[in-house]
Length: 496
Image (tube, rainbow, N blue to C red):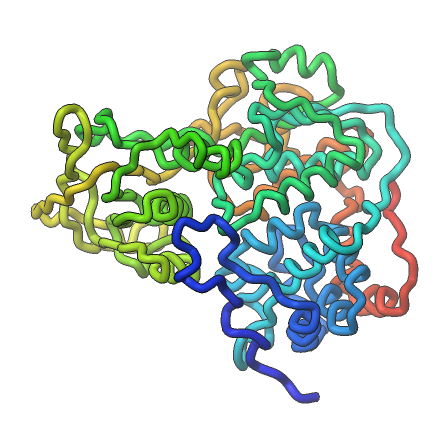
């Protein structure tokens, strides 16, 4: 068998030309055509030991998807992914596949470029959404038991989907007007088109999930009352609390919280924001931070101002905890980056920030993050600006811990036991509110892990029970089950 080591399109994916991105919030990543998706999928050698499935937090059937797409059976490909991934179009766009997930371990990648599984998955998801709506996964008989989920982000949606498939009644309580959590308001439209997330969230709701938006548990309804209304409760309120730094001048006008900035721009839709902008950024914008959110803030500010936007980071580019492909996109759009600088003071003029006094840093010893730590040199430089956006870290949402008596651990994260249960009986927690800020796909995995524990709690069964997703994982990674799948044998659900 000949082995095609290079991808069928320009590596890593086709992109909207940089000259067309100015002020444009349309997706940068361009989709494959059907012919391109089939050609790229045919590069998969359907490994006997599919590490790509094993490394995926959602156990996405990359091998089965590629096999089906290669022969043009897009419906089969969709169902093979959808069995374990309720937000397949969303995660196809948001996952750093090449950086640390499926594409990073692709066997083909040892000889050339890995199979573009993220692009293939995106094609399949978009095909289903726009061309051929497919039925939902099978569900079990109704149990008569109910679960309240606090938070409609990726973790909450993934948990709701699994609990419905087990036959439980589910109600999501979401503070914002729309479902999606950070994926909705924290990921810019040019990276994740909101109609994709909206569609996939609506498909989960369509499985029989009840939704109450505009409801903040702990303010509009107590956690105690919620526990009285349901047989179990899952807290999935995500990461919300911004890291506090007492840099002088932080209270000046024009110094903005980056996470609130993204929420204000995208939560109600970017078109609505453009009609009534809430931020006076000016033409010279400094963004403090080096992670995904800092990059998102900078590229968003660049589109809003079409001005001079600079990321300022205390380490070097090599230490930035962000997908280098996205950094390269930012540079193509005109984004500037300055390294080994950290804010010492924000300096104002007539009550508004006018410049930032920066400490010049150098790299010292390796710290707990595995990166060399930044150390002040004693030198300072000034950077003039019209506004500053700070995106230097965000911890778990601590609102319920502070108002409802749930025991908290480090950084205010909810403390849970081995069964994902909090200090309150029948109240579980999962996702970023437990782990801290993470990938969408990891939050989803934690959400459905907690949903599995809730199912076992409600049905009074031990955790030796074969979960729905473990069943699918075994089937998709086992050679015998994989052959059954290729032969078209009907999928069976595990015992409840």
